[in-house]
Image (cartoon, rainbow, N blue to C red):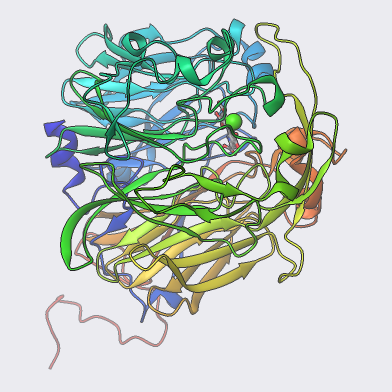
Length: 604
Ligand SMILES: O=C(O)c1cc(C(=O)O)c2c(n1)C(=O)C(=O)c1cc(C(=O)O)[nH]c1-2
Ligand SMILES: [Ca+2]
């Protein structure tokens, strides 16, 4: 979208959840830098009035900040030129029944902006376009049906004259797809399913490729038994990227349903797949399936970060993806060629690695370790000590990339599990999970459940790693000030040196952080914003008031002690440096400073 491109090009704004179309989460702002970040202080705060998990971040367009909440997906427009006064609020009516069919808390990863519209895709799958100035509803359309388990938690991607949306419900047998709607009136333009016949997947058997080869006729149908693909998941609840030059959108598909692999023999295409599609038509250019026939619930939906970098002496258009399965992939995003696939979490034990030999029968496939194969061990058998756990070495928490350091900054989980598949019958709108889980910190390690790492996507190597007590479930931000920010589940906002990882600042916000750090400039001064409000799958114990470690799809386990550190509550905290940045900013409250001359001129 011309308007999205123009708005995201202004460093003083945060105009899209992902920072830019490339999902780099990098800001050119450098007033706050490695030398002064230690002086950060709270500038102002805002309570959202909602208790459960707060993912995503506010947007800033011009002088207005747009803050969203989890269910019921309220939106506030705050006037940054007027002390954050509420310009308008949007509080949709939503049937609370929808909460029962949300797998992993009532999270929402935020609103989008295009052409003067605020676009919000609610939990009940209502997609609404609001006038950004007034909050007035311009149009509204229903994209799914919660009665059959279809919900939404993701942000949307405005591209050209369309807005592209996904769907959640892989734990309810929902058939994944992306749908493009007209920005002008909300009418449907194209729809591309993750599974099923070529026509419904918008696949061309001769032109769409997998690892450089034509994908062939009915590649999805041939990889499932019977009609299982109709309730086979592959939902699309993650982050979306867009390359304006190639006009391709990129996203990943989620777990095949059910979690019991014995109920769905075959590769279960195209679940667990990176997809590249034409933004105008939805036609698939290339796919890459990372985890064929998933046995662990390693949804492939994490963000695709687009960069221009040199690899093997050649400048290439790259796509880097940190998958739930514990492998970090670097691909050529034009051709879909697989360049690097390496473990980014030392705990990973279910695979010995990916076959990188293009002439091999198993090219591009991960080699599975029999001991940790829940399919080979079979139904009603408990496979113990699988690393990573179902929520992966990384879940939805997005990484950041600094073009200055050519380094990726990745919030990770360091968690393992016991996994016991069982037979489950499908009933529309009921959980269709088919496995029980117990999750715990990775053994033989630092004892914590997370690391914040710096990653070299060309070498496929960790540069440095900061141990954390809990999973780092917050999104990172990198800036031209040579610093990187992230939040922790206990509630700390932290800033570290982009080169060395040295901790430079931390502040404990009122609740655990699962939101994404953002930055903006207002009246000439740089600010850092973060939503706190513990929840999400890792924090579901607190969010849903669960005490039994087997509740919350097994996530409570090692996360139960989170309640020793934090409590529910949604709040935005905005940080600044002391001192003035422009004529309109408040003067610094520095008692040691000389009083300013009365005439406002320079002294001496
Ligand atoms: O398969 C799906 O449709 C689906 C949806 C969601 C969601 O919408 O939040 C999650 C998951 N799966 C999932 O597997 C998962 O680990 C997860 C974590 C979270 C979160 O926000 O903390 N959501 C989801
Ligand atoms: Ca899932």
